[in-house]
Length: 113
Image 1 (cartoon, rainbow, N blue to C red):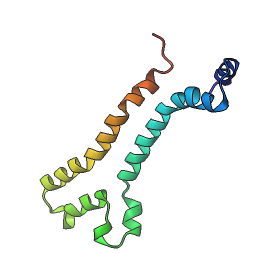
Image 2: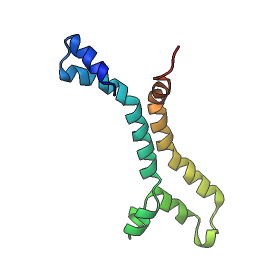
Image 3: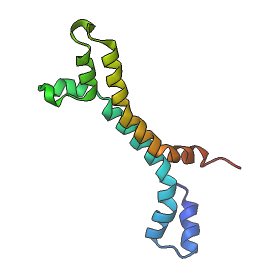
Image 4: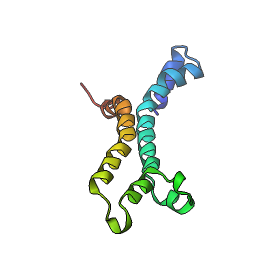
């Protein structure tokens, strides 16, 4: 973050808290939203760590459950697996749609009009 922004706010009489909440936090919000969406997606779709640590089928995560829908040697119904994939995508899409505004702000932050 540019130090000149804090200096200009301090000249205008802002306190440290006001500099943080009115200058630095709005600038940092789009990258933090992007990081939150990417982290949520990574942990939501994680496969190997739950596969290693979980022993009970009741605690399996969605990706492991989707693999178990395939059946032994992939003999399960493809339509059931694809329906499970669509259901598993709903939370990720919802989180992305909620944070889409911050993505656009982050992309256009350094552009000129």
